[in-house]
View 1 (cartoon, rainbow over the protein chains, first blue to last red):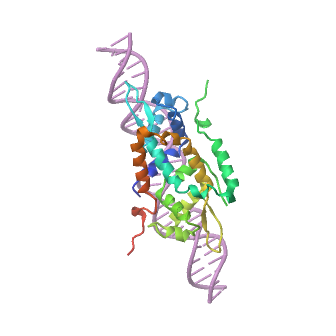
View 2: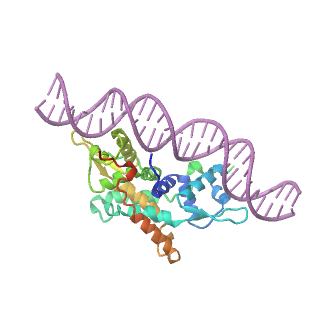
View 3: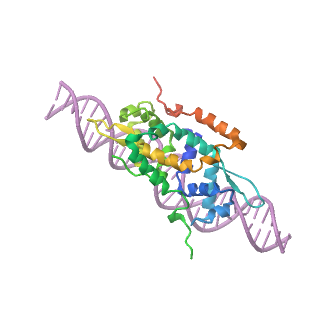
Length: 125
Length: 125
DNA sequence: AGGTTATATAAACAAACAGTTATATAATGA
DNA sequence: TCATTATATAACTGTTTGTTTATATAACCT
């Protein structure tokens, strides 16, 4: 087995749709655990675990406000992931030979702003 | 032939340093499984499995050349991951209040071009 | 045809993961 | 002080992951 560097943790954290949705929410501003949990059909401990994963990956940090632990997004880790991807950007940018592929990618990315996913979303009853 | 492509699979595939190193190698051009396996202290089946993960994530595709299965990087999946991160770029770009954080991030990314990592690199004997 | 080379698959296994329920801790406000 | 609110931790469970060894498949070359 091998020692985890922070890119490992960052990408692993980003690989989960619930966690990406949490980040999408936090991009709009701080939120408490309750607020973050609300959209999901998942127990509170499950969300706490996701938050711990995000925190270990450096993607969020938490403060203290009375009983609440408001979460804040931490752009640094995202920037590192972005940095890593930037190495490869030449492969798809200004590559007219594969323009169709790029257009496909853009379209897919469009359909995917990663708000909470259906399977995980709490049902109104 | 190229396979499935979700952000889940893409980010999960990128979360492993061996797989990132394989992509770094493939960014220089096609390579066979043997060639890809060479730098690592890992058995050939292990590499084959990593390649399958990369293929399922749409990050590589494979051709056929006699017994060999040359691998080629597929920028589309990388572009989608990049697209997703782009949503958040404003959080760290032109953010002078946190310039120091950004500089940290850049420095870390510098130290990390993700060639094969030490722990995994085959020992010469 | 038969041996060699390149790659894939199968079975096994330990470790990590994503959930759950039940319970503990911490701070509040009445 | 006590019940309530917000969050964390523990213990458990089923699934996935990263690796191994052993074996199978596929195409080459003589």
